[in-house]
Image (cartoon, rainbow over all chains, first blue to last red; front, side):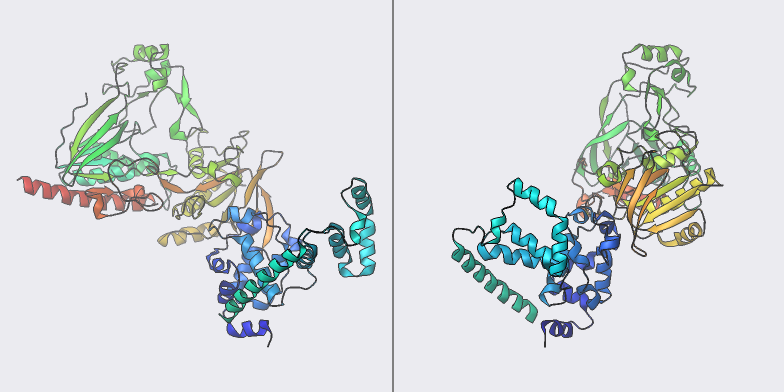
Length: 210
Length: 427
């Protein structure tokens, strides 16, 4: 039984409770009074980018629309501008809830695989933990080739003038493609991350077990 | 020196709005002696600044006139205007209040003829009209002011204008030597009816009050609709004097908001529903009202009032808390937000935006003399540790006129019980 099915079974017909217990800041969801000031304040034009604005997501959670919420790309579109948090009359930490739901959907394997923010987050993490330094060249190339070789070349050509400009301004080093710069104590970083993973794994396992 | 006969059987009423007047009258009409203290030059408070009341849409002058008549006929009530309680000592059945009285510079010889007003040249902002207009520095506070006596603004004292006012008065009513004084008044019980003030709309930054001229508050809108107001009863917008026919009402401006007022101010939904009637009354052909709301709270039996407004084709309801207001190149305020019915974004220009501002107790943040228990919004609670200090009207909660009067009557009854006990003990 996958993590998803196990959790779906556990919280059958009570998706709000699942969000409250499993999602960071999820216990705030019930405080929403559906005034709509969060989505009205959102600088992303969610009409095209978001399937569901925050207050609709909150209502869907209460309505038990588990599949629709967790597979949605909406919460991945949050840019963390914090406008909604500042204006929310009930002081809901909306930005954090969006990230919390996204993280939960990712954790149980329901998040849309090729959603650009999710993809980029994974890429960034792998990139910076590998050497302890962010390799910007590999990071941006990884994002360009997200949807395959042909579209990667196409995307890259579109941006070539910017790239040449960056190289000339010494903001982009083409030799970073071969290895790249590293931090001094790479082993130390790896050990630290290993320990952090362990702590997180045991914490989340305990949470999932309820 | 103002001389007042007050004893431990006297009831002190602080605040001369509709609640304070009611409490004073109810107590006095049972035979108690009352001292009524009002900080403004005239009684009536915020009720007198309304154009009409809901739900019957009659003019507040009517209800106030009845109370003024009762006051005039009752020798047991001593009214002090331009007076503020600055200290309160003692306990149940034995209070002493310090009352600071500001000079009016006009004595009781005044007949209200208005010769001083015509003689004076200086103009000062008119607080009765929420400073939307100006009046002369010798003025009657409002058309049906009680007491019906003129006031001289302190700004002209010591200038030629004051001398002109004195020279113009045929009745020797102007006394430029009046000084501020503080008196002590004894009382057995105190009724605290200091009322409410509109929440400072400038604090709701995204709505642009103070930055955009055509964003006003609901209390200012009352004055625009009133024939005694700065526009003579025409709904004209402040920026250019253009007729404002397409008006947006934004509900919960400050209320039900953890960043501003925690409580629901209770009256604002009904106030906006009422104000849509003003729009239709002034512009029957092409007036248009849009109410932006979270949910309409037409308190208990006023649901039918709401339904009638809903049936009015000139009024539309948008279920949404407006996220922000901007201004376009024509000076029109533009409302931005998301309609939560269908989750559609809107960007809608209007001629005028009226913020249905919340109520906060007017003594919030000011030291109430003595130890008084208040809730998290600053409203006075009924608590035994308050002794014989009883809250009345909007000092205790966000109330409409009807409920404020009920609350004041209840407070009067509590105060009467206290002074009755004092009387029995002293007999």
